[in-house]
Length: 131
Length: 499
Image 1 (tube, each protein chain N blue to C red):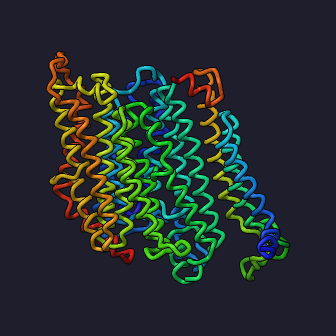
Image 2: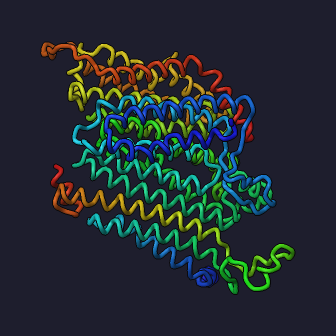
Image 3: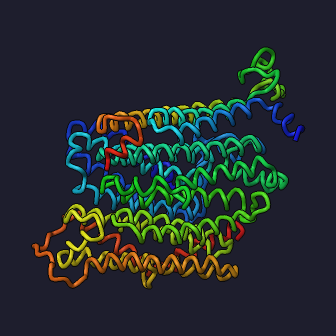
């Protein structure tokens, strides 16, 4: 048990991810307010993106642009990948953020339309008015 | 030329969607011909593509010439689209159904749309191109992006009629986004374990390093992916969004959503199981396919049970779709060629049947305002052709030869018996009996001999409704009559992934 906790503590980013994800999920499920549900959804999406970014981090590595002597000798010399962080997760993250923004736009439009129609953002209230 | 076909097929609806607001903003009546012409062109290109693939074998399209197979081993650079027989058959079905759905959509579009009809056609074309992307994608992240492209346009389209549809669309959006997040989480796990996103490369790494298959990362990743795609394909306990969204969506949209959205998500999952994880994959100590078979059996039985108790006909067919997803999963999870071929054949059949079912319900609402089973009595004696189409549809859903549904179910049952999996075969039979029961309710309502027979002149159906209902009915029969070559093709596909 103790060793499991020790292993977990060595990966603070995983703990942060789990906290963010479950927190967002809980808000999504438990809150009756539609905008709060959206905030929960945003947290869930952000937590996954956060995990994606953190796994690309490396100790003592720098941004993935050839620097110093590497920039001059890149054609002839082997470059040590340990010197640079992995750029791919960041690129994936950018795409995922675009998707997230688009989802948020559509969902806010839907919430606005629901508010105009039913005059409320409370889920129970809206369901009552539908019946 | 034939090498570039996948991209051309994708670009036809996509570029039309981009041009649509520019052209349609000035001349609103051009929108529909433009959209229909685009999907017809896509249909033709898809058929040529199928012919080319069957002739020359599978091709891999490398974007910008960055080919995975020529890059350094272990560090694949580039994005690939896989154009194999399975993808090209799916694509023919997809583009065919998309064109029928667009023909159908014209007269039943809500009048309140007005000028926004331009945006409607733009969104539906983006939905179609998103689905095309999922079918071709050879890359986990590509599947995610295209899933979201298709889903975002679907959320907006479901909400078109306003009112209760907005609430249904919002629920669909919340659950759909949750599903996409789970899927992306699975992708992150796979990437963390292997450092690649390409399906072929991943499969290679998983066979080269068998210890990966038992690592917690891959197990958790595939579990998360399955939950995400399970929400997208409305697998039984995760189906919450589907009935509301399909029932409340405008009648012009429900057919295309019902026919394609869940099926394409299921297709993506089939790709992941058989092309990446392999048929013998295990989650923990549990054999993955066995687990899927059990979930599928539950979905098949409970979905049709729920369909039986519905009053609203659209909702009834929505639950029927949930039970069909279960049937397909039962077939695919048997782990032999017969089951796989039956499942995939049933998937294509189900896409056609669901489109047909929602065409008929939409036409019933459009012509007679009939939503519930009781109101369908209004159709009595007034639309013989629609009733005929409904009978063909019922034959296929129940599984009576010579319709396509029979051959799909037959091979699913044969596959289950081959594996001595009598529970799965029993689930298919029970689902069939329940299907008979809910169609019985519909036919009793239509044919009941009562004094209060509604007198009313026969209403001529709108031409495009007649065409689309007729084409799907003919397609159901043709799929049945030509089932042998298609099933043989799927058997070969199954053999190529080692079943």
